[in-house]
Image (tube, rainbow, N blue to C red; front, top):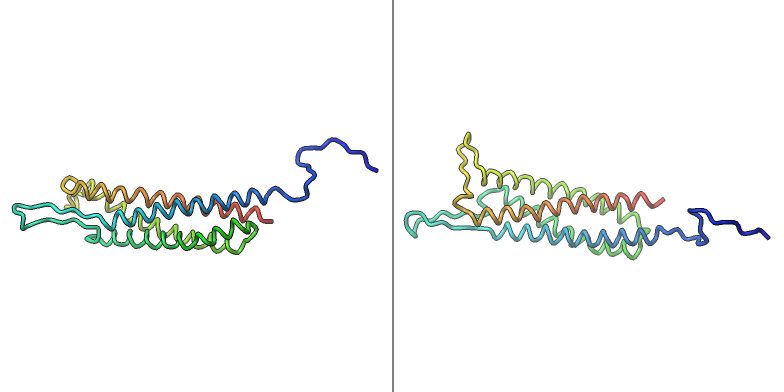
Length: 188
């Protein structure tokens, strides 16, 4: 019979690695981040799509109106946020599957590829809209683009606010990709 010696750090009696609990925790965090990114992108799409403001000019019969669909960039922003929010909604069952079966690798690989594609789409839409919002606030004297936010205050506040939700979605998608990469690297 062998005498029991002192237990060193890193040794333990259980044969099951503690990775299962960590992987499940990462899968739960993945699910929560997907829900938060869905809320941010959906709120951005709705906020931008419902933005309009009308200003009277001389009489009540002549009016100037600002809508999101006056600029194709804002239309692209709404479509990009809508597509990404739909993707995030449809990816939730796969995220739940990763919680139940934390050792599944193929689903994580699929999600990391699709998350990367959605990150590109969302970044393109948010960045293009941010450029137009900047011009709306500051204008450009060389091209005779006047700052319209002095007249259309409510319109500019709403489009600026919708950018915030979209960029939060970008950051959350980056975190999802990093989280999936770490989870995949832990499967050896």
